[in-house]
Length: 320
Image: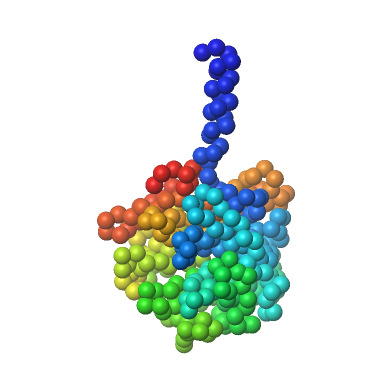
């Protein structure tokens, strides 16, 4: 091979390789995203509801939520902010991990928000509070409007909601919070209030530190998944959305930072959405890595258990 042909060969190779590197997901800008809540709605498209890490934000002071959609999981549309804390009367900060559900012909955006300040040096001086709100829209991309004008409750302090609508149309809410981990509460049909109190679920005797629960159903089996110790994705299985649950182990190993996720089926294939802490070269002085949403295919064994998932650069560009 002469020098000209060799140069052409390596030029083609250089231009070809990047188009296969799909992780993190390309939303068309440098937006920093985390905590993906993924859903497939009646139009067949995939929608991701995400928290938005602002550039050089102070201690996760986050102000709005974005929604993205795709028909093929490769090309994405950023529909912008679907809700902001400036649109909420009872909170002004902490726009953290959200979720969304479809019921009664409308889309319900379930979000955590709060106020105050967390003093990491002197925790006893902290004034930070967070609660769970519900917003509503006729469109999956919003804009969403606060459905209640208040949080669903003020105690317990809580965040990271998972809003699960079962096949019988009952709505279950799981959260991370003070005294609320591994608990579930039902919502009324109007999606404005809860039924009774939290029910503490039977987790089979294993309840490690957790956040960001995600519940889904497959073949009449329910899956309670979470970042165990806030980093390693693990899961339980049950025959009911309220348990009792049986611990099944690890889905994805930790990687130097917290990890929030969702698992959803798209065109017959299951997909795990999650976020990674990535050094993009232009991070802030006080934070060398920032969060970006990624995705991988998920595979199940014959008994319904989940095969371990490995992070890849190719993500969803590789064939399932």
